[in-house]
Length: 307
Image (cartoon, rainbow, N blue to C red):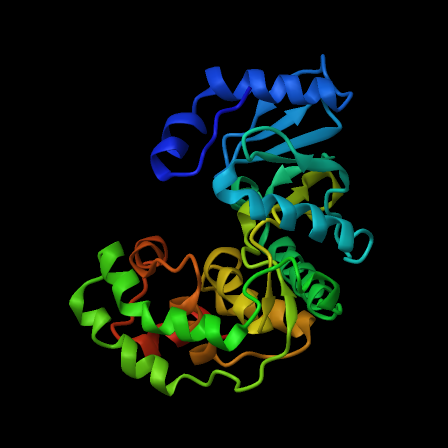
């Protein structure tokens, strides 16, 4: 039996504790008809995710993130067969106990792109970048209206207004130095945000950590996972995670990806969405990517410029 998890304190006490989580996961697997198989928790991920034998994955969502569980199941079902790279197939989904939700899905085979990246030759990296661009283009070409009642934020302009109003405070809370903080209001005021953006299905975290590759298949992409944070909004918003965590400020790789995607994006637009993103943490990005830029305009070109 899994306890209620609605607060940060409850999350910290329950979610990492396998003495609590595992019995609940095992009982649910039995209910779903996949009990008795080896249950292995993945180290990655903000919510508990278990490999169930070799063919299934069980993802658990506490009450505090139950909406992500609903989104994951609906998006996986909606995207079945729609992308040029595999995604998990939803096998079962629903409510469990005390506000928990679950999604039982098929397991994609291969190796995570993030740990594999140092071993991948440059020519294969460029092909992967093109494959990513094609996959994103296919995702963004879909009519997302069937998911409009399920996915956030609903009112995209209102969402951006809220994010803009809190942009400086969010980065200050993360520890961004004042020399950067003072640039944010003017930069956002001048940013080329579209007045009436396209309404597109967004993965929002399209990054190496959520991509799977197969070294036996000349490092082809064999999967895209984690659709719980999916949204509907401007397609440029999806390029934030791409530039920061997939191509990681490599202008040649981003150029290859956007050529395959089929259109360019203004670096200042992507930098603006970096500041407006729901998970925006500029100090972390600066530590990870170690740019030479000292101004947001320069940073936009360094992170999102192409070659």
